[in-house]
Amino acid sequence: MHKIALIGAGRIGRIHARNAALNPRVELVGVVDPMAASASEVAAQWGAQVMTLGEVMDAPDIGGVIVASSTDTHLDYSVRAARAGKAIFCEKPIDQDLARARSASGDLADARILLAFNRRFDPNFQALKARLDSGSIGALESVQITSNDPSPPPPSYVAVSGGLFKDMAIHDFDMARWLLGEEPTEVYAAGSCLVDPEIGKLGDVDTARTVLKTASGKLCVISNSRRSGFGYDQRIEAYASKGMVRADNVLESTVQVWGEAGAAADRFQNFFLDRYAAAYEAEMTHFADMLDGASASVGYADGVAALALAEAAAESVRTGQVVRL
Image 1 (tube, rainbow, N blue to C red):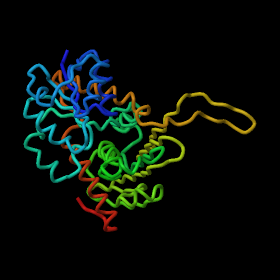
Image 2 (image 1 turned 135 degrees about the vertical axis):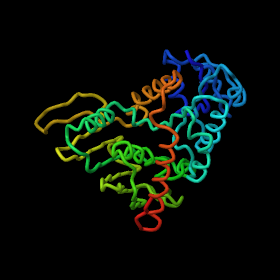
Image 3 (image 1 turned 60 degrees about the horizontal axis):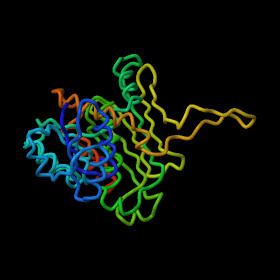
Image 4 (image 1 turned 60 degrees about the vertical axis):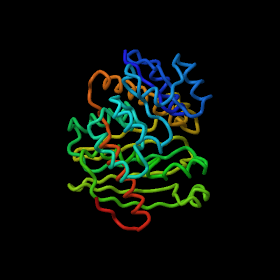
């Protein structure tokens, strides 16, 4: 069993702590957080110890770390862990600044690092990807990704989030690269503030449409909104030469009610931690695979590539022009 430590005991850190504690191949032994109460609570819940960052990095028996701290610490903590010879499970984004993220290539390009683009591990999206890769619907031509949150986050969160493209759409940029099978070379994005005026006052947008184009001509359209009005809206449609493959929203249950007014299904799942619960568990299993010696299926280079697309989209919104990569 591999001993690991959690850095960051906030909302997403607690999800990873639970999945680590329940995974039979890893042992959560340490929790690091500047908020002592949070660190103590998570450590006590899962039988771990409260530790300092230095203690974790210096511990020879701790083989891996989960970096789930604030975004502005992701890169620094990952570099420190890489230099300490540890496997790294880092939450997205790797950083909020592309140049800074690229500057860490000397430490992270060959490191054992898993970038937590959890949607690659969703069983529905993995099934869609497998169908595309099988060639059963022919050659891929275009992709439509829809990602709409149930309701907008508070302005206090938006102010430190890095903006819609780096905080929210970065998942979709990674999915686009994964599904297209080649790098986008052109980015065009349009954005507006249609949901919450306070988000606009902070210099961000809450609604965006982004078009990616690859060198071979494949297209991907990404639709984002901070508010759907009907639950957590996560859909993908992939169009190929022989047909289309689609992954739809996940409902709270499969129950339907049929009556004179028609058929009514249950609600869409309303929270990302519910919608992607299986994906978070699968991520931890993959991290255990890495501790056993496997290569990361999504790593530092993928984090940098998604961040490059996020910055290009933001530039396109500012300038109204296509950005060529």
